[in-house]
Length: 131
Image (cartoon, rainbow, N blue to C red; front, side):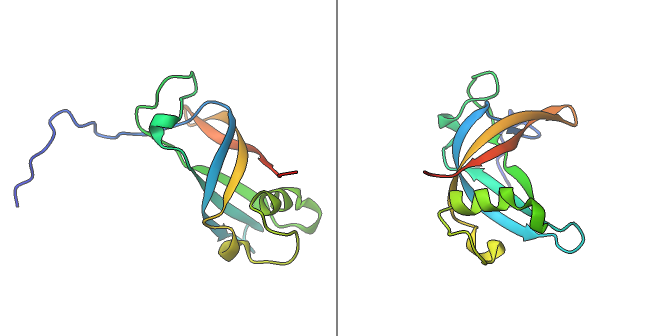
């Protein structure tokens, strides 16, 4: 099979951080890293398209917005972030399985940027719980 290639294609389109602010995001995946890490790994994706988002300096994105990874502790005395994402997702605070019940739900998130391996990456500042 012969494939017609785009000679101008980039080696990597790359993923870009978006500017700091509040965003509606979807929980893509939740992985229970317990008991080794005693936390959850949460992967969030933007609900807006790349053309609706702006990069860290306000410029249009050239590639896809990066997914945002967050780590939420399960320790009994440190569940403030677990409660925040639970209630931001519209779930009642109580016993439930976040690995099953959070994926697909939308949450409002404050994103900030942080350098990681020479590039700016988005990081969850906080989950916004509706009043």
